[in-house]
Length: 197
Image (cartoon, rainbow, N blue to C red):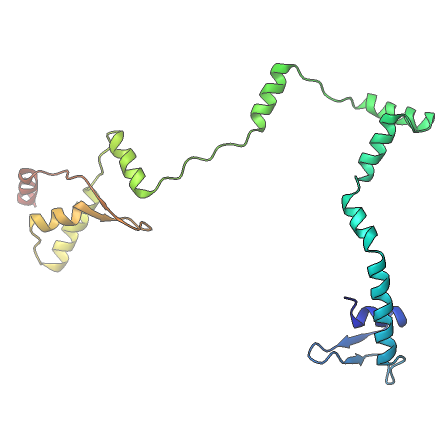
């Protein structure tokens, strides 16, 4: 749709105006008396819209035509250019020849062009399962230090069972589930550790 400003610029080139959004009224900046009427603006909008609609076929063709470069290349290969133009193009092509590759080089080039595969994204559960599979045990030393600090601050002793229960369920930030960790201390180890404190 052709706007009022386009129609005004067509009728009065260089005119400085503003068009209100709420009521479509025109305010002339350089003129006390507008040089054109609203009817003239509306008629110009219709005329410009008719021209725009008439040329729709051009816009549709332009999208689907081959590029100028493709058209010229096809003409060159068809031998349609004059001899002097063909000689100039041939001289440039000889100056900058197309690189050639052996099949092995081509295979290596294609291999390098393959997108790098991103590592598989694992859920928290899959990650823990993978860690168990490779024989890695979770380290609870940091949690033990935290527990000791909590005991010193709160002076509320925690039983072994309470502590083990807190260690068996670890809240992983961002995870939707609680991960159950393997128990790493036996009762005897825990008692020995408590006595050493």
